[in-house]
View 1 (tube, rainbow, N blue to C red):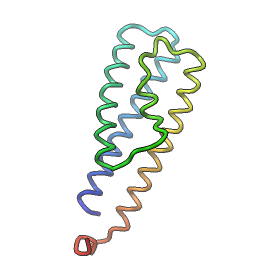
View 2: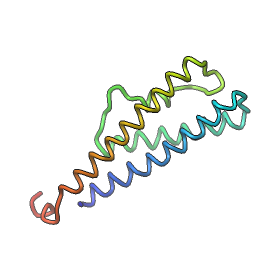
View 3: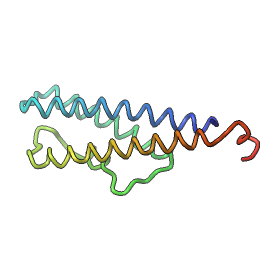
Length: 123
């Protein structure tokens, strides 16, 4: 596996971990139905970090997903104003985003395995 593939895979794995933590914050907040200001602030602060990391990740792995469920979720302005209908749609987005990230991880893992030890000499 080349250095570039290792870096891409590592960045993707790091983002998936962050994304999963962000999802847990979201689920906990939605489940409680009563969202305190500090929970909202934690959600919004985490969302900002996830957005920056996601934009950096797309540049590193050279992807431009359409539709982009992650961006749709991150564009939600607040969790305090989320209706039941919007929450259902958002949950479907989480599922799609998780599948997309899993597919990317498989893709990069397979590509990294295909690059054997001679690949550095072959280009």
